[in-house]
Length: 306
Picture 1 (tube, rainbow, N blue to C red):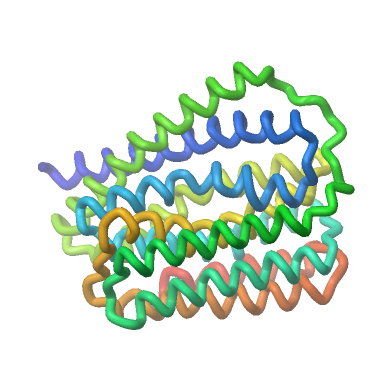
Picture 2 (picture 1 turned 90 degrees about the horizontal axis):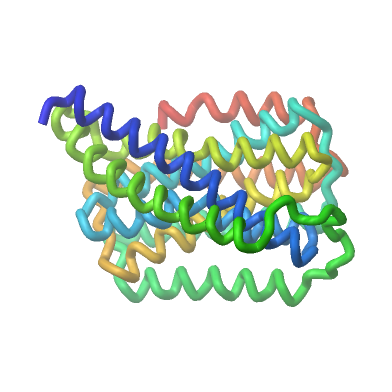
């Protein structure tokens, strides 16, 4: 197929992923709002998982089509963009008050998830069924721990904007679009990379940035509606979901092979170091503002160099 057509189909896939994730998150957010759980809990769980649907579905397709490098690049690009570009944009839009204990807990979970990802890729380039299942189990245990320690004091006071029926319809439409977009992205992303001689990993980094848009849009919208917990929780939660659950699901279904794993390790290491540094910086303050947002944006730039 013509490389131009392949590139267009990749862009269509990314656009479909963005649209589908947005609809899915809107529906999931309405359901969560209906039950009135805390803003951070909503962000880290429901919204983060919903906005990570592109990565989850892409992981499944990558396992089937044996495009492990694309998958890892996709997750690295997405996660690095969220912790740097995402938090940077949110901090520029508005100053957000954040409880230190939540930043420490969720930040530690994020760094641990990334460390697990680095470990499984470093130890051989093949993520086995067992390793994938363990990663999924660790993620489930993390969610259970969050639920057990949730104090339910920071409740969402507004009534949901959608009925439960409409929310379910949004979820169905969103998930369907995500599945189609994931297929286009993986299939034609690999084909385009091979056609023009671009490594799959680099294609994955760029497409990972594309599918970061839902998280950033959700976070900015949450900040403007005075729901900073959802904004920060979504970005940190997605960075726990993607390296641990999204990658683990793909490996559990079909082993994920990362050809030339040495190529992707610098990107994973950078993602891990930057995330740890930002977590330490945020945990030492009571708010996220422009003094922290600008360094986050600067740290995003080297993503394309590692």
